Amino acid sequence: MSSSLIRSCAVAPLFVLSLVGCGLDEPALIADTDSLPDLKPGTMPDQSSKIDPECPADLVCEDIPAAYKVRDAATGSYGNYDVANRPMDGQAIRYIVIHTTEGRWDGVVSHFQNPSASASAHYLVGSSTGRVAKFVSPKHVAWHAGNWYFNMHSIGIEHEAVAIEGKMWFTDAMYEASAKLVRHLAQSYGVPLDREHIIGHDEIPGVTAARQSGMHWDPGPYWDWDRYMQLLRAPLPSDVDPGQSGSPIVLRPGYATNLQKGSYCFGSSGMDCRDVAEAPANFVYLRTAADPMAPLVENQYLKGWPGDRLNNWGTKLGTGPMYVLAEQKGDWSAIFFGGQKAWFQNPGRSLTRKASAMMITPKSGLSSAPVYGVAYPQDAAYMPPTKPVAMEKIYDVPAGQRYALAARTTGDYYWAKEWVKSYDPSKLIVVKDGTEYFQIHFNHRVAWVRAADFELVSTP
Image (cartoon, rainbow, N blue to C red; front, side, top):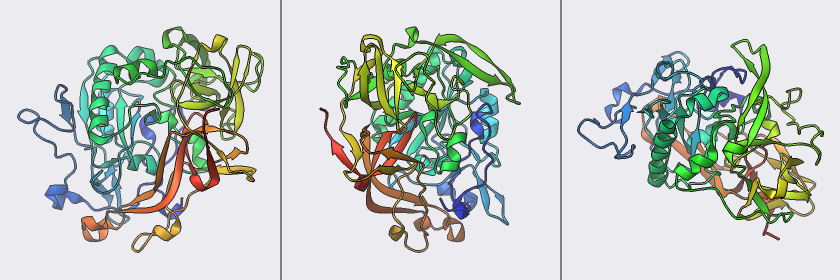
């Protein structure tokens, strides 16, 4: 990503509020649309007399518009989202991203209504009662993912919770209201109800190598993905994992009985680091060998982080996403994970289920192939007034490794910065080309690779 197109935003330590993650790659300039009543953000139907099509008919969504103001006329900086017309403008909505707020309802409302926050989400679900608020219409691009590509193509839903205390906040009312909302949005916008498209903030990659370590880890280890997918009426696979190397699998360990422990650094200083009691969790730890004493795997961007830190996403296989079984040794299974062969205890293959997917591997003759955090067009696609937006490799897939193919797409980028010069909706440009990309889970996070670097592989 060209530095001239990157919004400045301090990356907070992972123990700080989830909301600190600003939009990152949003264009730098935009106009105040107060002079354009038909484009005013937050103009929602009066729910006392009309049905809001952006909310299920049997769920009340309070209208609490997020701020949309110019903050500094001299520099053109603004907050807290981008005007769009998805999907009619060519930006398909493909993902719904699950977040936790790391704070209480009123603080979140205040944050999103502060135009200096550089953050917003489309919806918020409350903890105790499942109360729902809408801050940004799904047609607009909220700044919630910390990755401009995923902002372009997703709806962000915050949940009133502190990730490390998840079990205290994730109530029946919250799960049920959230699932009802997501089912409605998925049906409205054609989002597949699977774990490759209903994803956590912790599964969003950084745009550049430098941003990987600062990416967020919510909704955290205590969000019950198995239960949530059942509430979405899209349960995770149930077929027995045959233990055949080279085949796609998913982790489905049974949340209630999957007891995990770890450590965490509490407080704003991050210095109060201590053990966290064993509790039901949505992950298993990954090791470098089929041995309970073997070191945990390490992500190249998280070197020096204790492997058992519950916000260290680099050591954990999460519930639901597809991976490829690399090897089976007795009660240990290995998957291809972030370019490594990562092992976890899987007695009788009871923690995994068979998945159905094509797989990809680097093309013959390549020693490795690059992995990206975005799927942007090539330079030639950017015609004036737009300018090429750089893509940076964040990982490499070694030759011989396989990853499950989750989706295919072609490159696109939403160019909104010319809007400020003319107030002309035609200046809100979606740049596209035919560059084909494959979506995979490379480590704990989603990633993109260019189809030209890979070949398809079927299940053995």
